[in-house]
Amino acid sequence: MTDDTRAKILRAALEEFSARGFHETSVRELAERVGVTKTAVLYHFPGKADIVTALAEPMLADFEAALAQAAEASDTRRAAIEGLLEVWLTHRYLLRMNLRDLGLTASEVVFERFRDGMLRANGLVAGPDADFADRVRAAQAIAMLSDPVVLFAEASQAELRAAILDGVDRLFTAAGGEGSGRGEPGASTIRTASAVDDSEPPEGRESGVAAERNSHLGAPAAAGITPAARKSRRGRPPAMKPEVIEAARRLYDAGRAPADIATALGVSRATIYRHLPVAD
Image 1 (tube, helix red, strand yellow):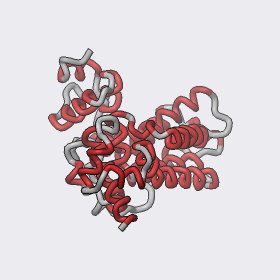
Image 2 (cartoon, helix red, strand yellow):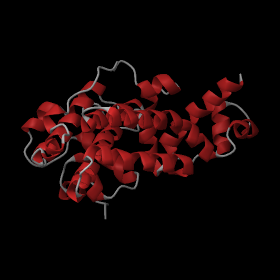
Image 3 (cartoon, helix red, strand yellow):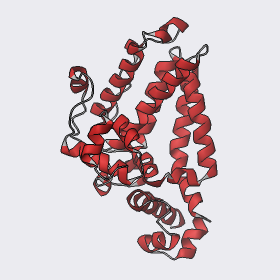
């Protein structure tokens, strides 16, 4: 029963932190949601930061394992990019929780492990002899893996994976294939990784969080971002579809700057201002 209560607290915390934010959710409210006393919650987790640590542990373990495997692979960049993408897809609802108010940073342990992992990932993607431009490009590629996963969490994993890897492919192709000159795989080697069962969100299977309970938090599945659409697109689109406008509003409500929203959605800042007139 004790383990069951702990699992229920974690499920409730993920849902409440995603819907309302880490800082706006109290321990007492979590206790009421689970149907236990506040003391019972504190028995399992002395503080809210400890709940975040427990929620993030599976993701961090997968993150660190993916980096370790990439470091041993013959195609380090490819293994790192595809490995990280699978981690983000698996734990996309936890990442989306962080979008609300950076709740994952409430735990110093989580923050430090995540920071160290991201620095290591940058080194793996940039390559051993990387210059400053290579490291910047690696940071861009890594950001391209997580942001779409958060924005379009309800989309088909197969379609989302293909679109993201296509975008990363274009980034390195535009750079002239510099990575291949250092024994790293060229952009053409970055392709969809192993097949994953998309019938049910992995995060939902692990934590019991049903996708429909979180559907109001992420971007719609039919956001119009497909590999074919990306290939036919030239420059930024002049307008946004209703579902993308809704995604922009969610980001703005979460405190993201208009310039960041424009970059994440692939539109101009003028388009963001047109659809979000209250933005500064």
